[in-house]
Structures are given as C-alpha cells and as structure tokens.
Image 1 (cartoon, rainbow, N blue to C red):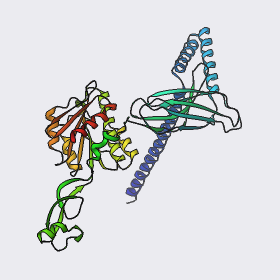
Image 2 (cartoon, helix red, strand yellow):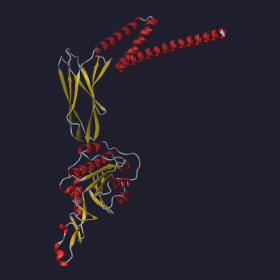
Image 3 (cartoon, rainbow, N blue to C red):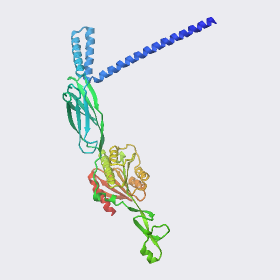
Image 4 (cartoon, helix red, strand yellow):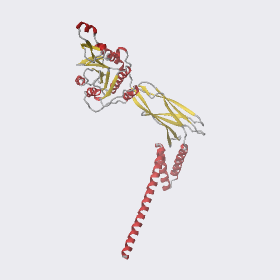
Length: 430
C-alpha cells in the first residue's frame, strides 16, 4: 500500500511539474507573440507616415549601410550616413502635434442639380504657441482638394472658401478634412483627421408645372365615379324617398308634379390620387442622359402633385419613394439608380394597381426602347377607370402625342418640353 501510494505521489508530482512547465512555456510564448505584435504594429504605424519616396530612401540607406559595412567601402557608408541624416531631419520636422480646431460649413446640404454650393473651412490655433505651415486636404466625392494653411500664431485663425460643382444628381460626400504635414523633401508625411464628412444631396432638376400645363391634374379633382351615394356633389338621378333619407335632398318640384316624395341620388366623387411610376430598367434607355431626363420628369410631376395637395404615390420597379415631405420625396429621387436586371415592363402597371387601386391618374415615365406592345400590356394592368398616361423620354425626338388603346403616350426630348406636352394632354381631354 505504501509503495503504491509512493508511486501515485511521484506520478502526481510529475504531472504537476509538466503542467507548470507547460504553463510557463505558454506564458512565454504568449508574451513573445504579444511583443512581436506590438513591434509589428509600431513598424506599420511608422511606415504609414513614410511616403513612397521616403521608403525608397530607407531601402537605399539600409542597402548602403549593409554593403558598406560588409565590404568596407567608405563611399557607401558616406551615402548611407547622408540618407540617414535626411530621414532623421524629416522625422524631426513632422514631430509634434498640431492642435487645430477645424470647422467645416456648407451653405446648403440639399440643392438642385446645376446650383453652386459654397463651403467654408475654418482652421484655428487654440494653443499658446505658433503652429508651422501645413496643408489641409478636403475630400469632395471622389476628388481631393488641397488648401494651404499658413503659420498660425496663438489664437490665430485662417479661413478658406471652396465651391462644389453640382452638374448631376448625386449624393456627394464632403469631407473629412485632414491636415497634412511633411518635410521639404516629402519623405515623411503626417496626416490627422479633424472634421467628419457631411452628405450633400444634389436633387434632380425639376420644372414648375403651373397653369394649363398642370390642368389635367386639376381636372381630376372631384370627378364622379360609378359608385352611388345618398349625399355628394354630382347628381345622378331622382328616386323615391325611403325612411332615413336626408330631407334636405328632397326634390320638391318633382314631388309636386308626381305627387310622390322624390329625393336626389348622387354619384360618389373621389379625391385625386396621382401615381407616378418611374421605369428604372436600364434596358429601356439608350443613354444615361435619357434616364436622368426621366428622373427629372417624374420628380417634376410628383412635386406638382404635392404642390396641389393631391394624394401621391411614387415608385420605381424596385423601390417606393416617400411622399410625406418634399425633402423626403426629392432625397429618394436623388438615390434612384438604374436596374441591370431584366424585368417585364408591365410590372409597373401591376405595381400601380397593388399600391393604389383607387388611383385617378397613373403616369408612367419610361425610355424610348419601350415598345407599343409593352405599353399596352402595362396599361391593361392599371386600376380600372384611372387616367393612363405614358411619358417617353427620348433625346433628339420631336414632342408628340399618340394613343395606344386607352393609354395616352407623349414623347419629350427635354425637361423644358414637359409643360407643353402636358398642356396638349389637357386640350385633348377637353
């Protein structure tokens, strides 16, 4: 029993020593990995501040030092020393932290395409010591602008104005603002981010539809439907009085003539509900300019509908625009993009019937590649009784009107031609 206990004790001590050794080795390995990781991060941080020219100088200095010391070539050692001194001076030049306070202001965050946006960058030195000259980089979309900041005295400020061109609808990212300090030879560069980015919404260009150009929308207001009602605006016929009818609707002249109490029977009128369906299938357009024209046409009609306080539903093949406020509506039109997937065009008509079954007018905006057969099929999917209009956007085409069944088709070549095309629709409707 004692020998067995001794053997067990020895075995346990061996396992304990093995465990202790393994723990020591594991701790040592962990420390080594941590040290290696720390130095690798430091090396990466240093290399991030070294420009491509600086890296070439570092490689040349290391090569010259290696060959000069191994081969005992004095000239190589002199070159290596010169390059090393250049690098040390470059590092000393960019040392120190520039305590800037940078403010980025935009004149507006939402503009229409073609408008000019002015911004301002204000750089202040809140510290009690002067700050050496530096460069400030401002990112505008995919471009980068560089601004020179002179030497700033304590509590000094410097302002720079800049302009952002807005030729096409887009969401431009303005910023961030970064300060750049580098040595005269551009061997080492230090970059610090000061101001965060801001979004600039460049809305599609729209045209105002006033007077006769939007009259077809006004004509839809209070149009009678096929549903009968006991009280409304449009009188449909007369019928005999039944208990519960409003006595104010009694037609006394007919009652006196017939001897039977007669009341007016009305047709229900409905409030205008306009649907703007934008075709964003890339296969329907010849060029990007035609698609931009289609977006502007759809946005113009949607804005006019909201201006006249009519119910609005606006959508594309794959999305639906918010219509609660003008800002939301235009922001959603700003981010509309073309679909590369192939969908049948008649999905626009089916979507209109699903989203607005009681619509009084549906305007489908599309491109020149949409065939008459596709337009006719889409018109067959629209809500019954709704006024159906297709607007084709085609560069270089004459403004014209045609009809495909119950669908009115107008062709426009520019946004300025839209009011005239809609005016022609109203004249035909009369």
